[in-house]
Image 1: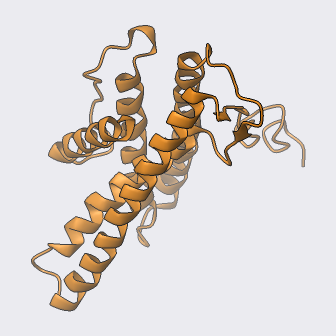
Image 2: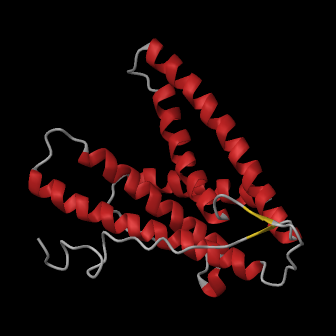
Length: 202
């Protein structure tokens, strides 16, 4: 199943990141980039999400220096763009994989493309990792650990459900009962032509 492979890669990424546990550590992808290798794309996608997760932690420091916060905000913006780009690369992989499928009469479209489901699955892997940290943190109160254990179990159930839904969607697409139609995100805030502040308008 696709989701089994994806979840294993996401765990690999998150465990690797936390060996050094810093946002500025070097990145290397152990999976071959040739021919839009799916494992390569999934690994890169989750690494972007993992670094951004920790950017978001850092910027919430109430004592952060304003200049550092602005720099970090720019990094978060760039990371969001990278994240969106990776989703589109993964969808391109699925489109190519299914280009020969004959779409059945009456086939329906999903509310989101497969890769946006993958995006949610990657973020969910991070939630599971960090909620487990809180559920097992020795210097936390028992009440805190118990509350986080309840949340962790819900997240684990959610991961099973989301994994099942993604696998079913990919199966439906491969059988022609659903079809993919991918819209580029067309983000405006990073575009010099579309953001009035960037193009110098008041």
